Image 1 (cartoon, one colour):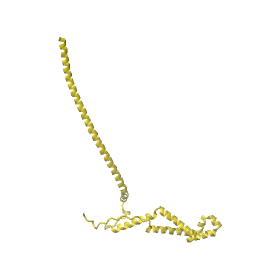
Image 2: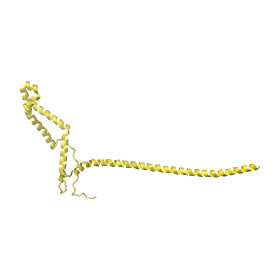
Image 3: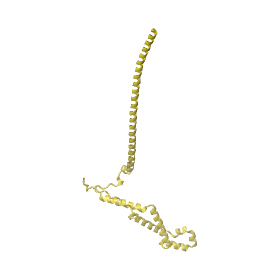
Image 4: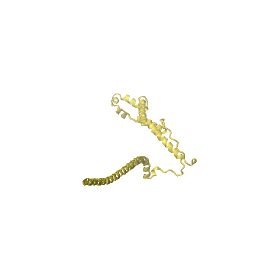
Length: 219
C-alpha cells in the first residue's frame, strides 16, 4: 500500500454544526442594532415626538415632554420603550435565522483561512475578478450541467434498456414467424405430394373402370 505524499495538503475536517450562540459577526450585528436603536431614540426631537401624540401634546405638553426626555435618556417609560424595540429586533433576528447564517459565514471565512494557510502551492492565488467571463460562467454552470448530465445519462440508460428489450422481443417474434413459415411450407409440400398420389391413383382407377366397362360390354 503506497504511503501518503507528505507534500499534499490533508483533507479538510468536516464542518462543525453551526451553534445558535452568536459568533463574532452575530455579536457585532446585534450590538450594531442596539446602538442604532438607542441613537435613533435619542435623536428624535420633541416636535417629531409630539406629532405622534397630538392630543396629549395639546392637553398635557409637560407630561409628554417628560416622557420624551426619559425616552432619550433610556429611563422610566423610555427604558421600557427601548426594551420593547429591542425585543422586536430580537424576534426578527430569530425569524430570519440571522445568528445561524452569520455563524455559517464565520465558518466559511475560517475554513477559507485554514485552507489558505494549508496550501502548498508556491503560486499566488488568482483573484476572481481577473478571471475571464467564460471561466466564471463555467464555474457557476458546472453544478447545474453536471446534474443535467446525470439526468440525461439516466434517461439514455433507460431508453437503451427499453430498446434492448424491444430488440429481444422482435428477435423472438421473427424466430416464431420463421418457424411458422417453415411449418406452412412443410404442409404445402405434403399437400402437393398427396395431390400427386391422388392423381396417380385416380388414373389407375379410371383405367380399371374403363376395362371393367369393356368386359361387361363383351358379355
